[in-house]
Amino acid sequence: MQAVASAVDDRLRAVGQRLVDRHPRWESALLRARDGYARATVRLRWLANRLRYAAPPAPYRLVNVDPAAIERVGPVASPKFKHAGAVVGGDWDRGGDPFAEMDVFRAYERHFEQGVPWQATAFYDRVVGQIEAGSPQWGCRTRREFDARCDQLDELYERIDEDGYRTQEELHAGAASDPIEGNGRSRRALKTERFKHEIAVHVGRDGDLLFADGRNRLSIAKLLDLDAVPVRVLRRHRRWQAVRDAWVRGDPVPAAHRDHPDLAGLERGDR
Image (cartoon, rainbow, N blue to C red):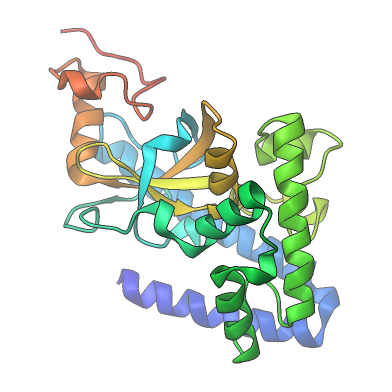
């Protein structure tokens, strides 16, 4: 059933993009419609989780984590509303490449720490190659557009370095803007669009934080050696959810998990 829903959503996204390409003035209406659909989907999962779990996952909750603790890459989460608040068993949390080996993170290291131009990185070559093969990347359809995107990454790094890390909600509430947020404040007015630009993680069975989305911001947070950044938890392993439930019921929880950021803020039950 989930696979069918995913296929239908992908088809609707493709149709919507073609409509926007032909009639740009429809973009705002289509964004609002998709935002409503996404929020309804997440809301239904939230209601179901409240019946199943003692500590139902809050799909829009942000938790503060040490960027250094996010070491491995989990399943790609796109679009994120399909994963928000999901509790999934199986072996999806096993394995996963190290985040430090992603070509985008290596490009950040070379560019910001060694002064290497973006154009001299393997990351740049890969993305431009995909664009020139007819596959738009990061909203870019040409090399020139991707060069402009790289300039935005420079600006994002400088903003975080100078002003500190800010959530999309904080940016939305103030006058500051996000260099890579897309279509500006019109998108940030929609809740699901704002949350698309937060760092997102999954939590594995043993509490491991697995990267899910937001590679630009996480790369910057790691390079700047920030102590903590707010992240959104999307998918949780069923065995980790059992730990959360035990925590709020007041049942015994392994000592190694008691300071886990995903338990922070959850009211501990008394036995």
